[in-house]
Image 1 (cartoon, rainbow, N blue to C red):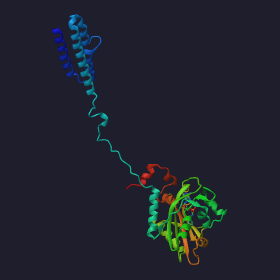
Image 2 (image 1 turned 120 degrees about the vertical axis):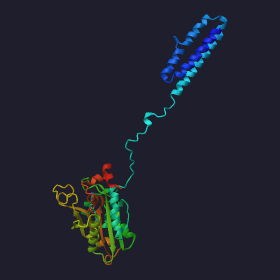
Image 3 (image 1 turned 180 degrees about the vertical axis):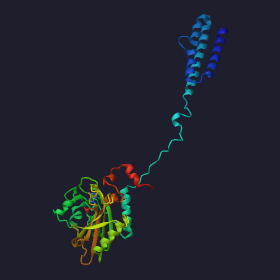
Length: 346
Ligand code: FA5
């Protein structure tokens, strides 16, 4: 029995030494096998040796082997657990300082908004103030008060999107002329930037939703010369001093006389017969204008004998495409960041 006790102690010491040498999972499994293997493990052999002991010693010897077995099991398990503790410099968490940095993009204003502000600033410098109006309008403000009688063929020029018989998406910013004149008496000098809607098929110069900037001046002694001078100053400031501008007689039910204003085609300079923007004419219309029709003044109780006015309405996106020399107005709304980012270079 004494010898058996010594043998157990010897096994324990050898196990401790083997354990300190086992530094990875593989070597720990080897130590475990040496002691626990069901075929030829040290513990199995010790259990077999029990038969050779005196019967009265076997119980105590069995307890000693079980104690050693528990000790071996516990120690190996805790050593295995220690191996799975986080590796301090895992490969994926290492920082490679030679890689290019990750650039964060900040939101920015849309090119059409930037251009709208540029237009507004020129008018503000001339003493205009900014006015707004609803995008859903009544037939009265969009048409009737502006001298379009019901069923008048002039309505056909504005491909209208109706919501009900009386409500529609405004086709131009001109209804705000009426709203402004109803609210206050002349002198009036306002601009009205905003969205308008028409049932149109998109093409390089047309959109079904686009922006207009309306202008209205009503005062004593206003003439066509004021209209011409204001628009010329505006266009020369917006584009360049020597830009070619053309006033072309036209018709609008709410202005008399009326004129459309064209600028030289900045995209082709009038040199490309197949230009998709000006169709080879060298000119592109950017606004409609005229002297406020006396009947419109009467509709809002302003005396046309005492007051006169001029008005104009221009496409913001249409004008922006010329200023930026963009050959297709649709690029503004395709949300291609390669396009829109070019306008925010600050
Ligand atoms: C009007 O809308 C009138 N209300 C303008 C006006 C105001 C005349 C005040 C007289 C007095 P017109 O339909 O021509 O007119 O449109 C004015 C401008 O809006 C055009 O010159 C053009 O620059 C722009 N525009 C018109 N249709 C489109 C479209 N589908 N897509 C983009 N821009 C357009």
